[in-house]
Amino acid sequence: MMRESEFVAVTDRVLAAIGAALDAAIDSSDVDLDWSLNDGVLSIDCGAGGKLVVNRHVPNREIWVAARSGGFHFRLDAGSWRDTRSGQELGAALTGLLGLQAQVTIAIPVLPAI
Picture 1: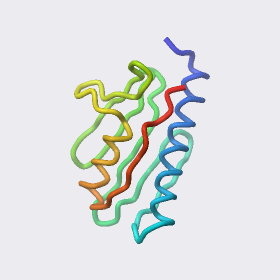
Picture 2: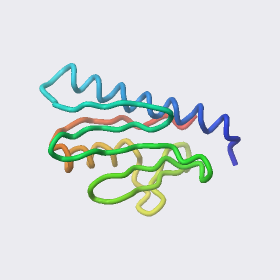
Picture 3: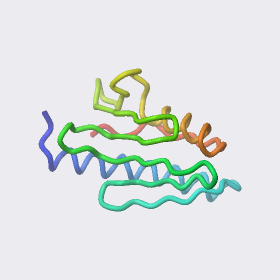
Picture 4: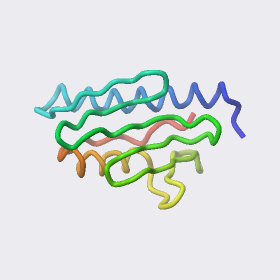
């Protein structure tokens, strides 16, 4: 199992990459989203669609996503962050959740695993 300090460093990079993708979408289109990152918790304000929250869960070494449609847990698996139930990659899952919840198309890339 990954040490806590390694996990925090990796998830910091993941959350920063999500923020960068959101910024790129906001800068290049009329996407109306706000987001903030604070101590391992990334909150995306989807306006009338509510909030989508992405955070690290240190004890389980997972990234958790809370959305209107439910809660999702992602764990490192074969070099990428995969949903523990469906196996879907984190970036693809976030792309879909943002489409459902905020009615926006934002392509979140495959997120760093190291």
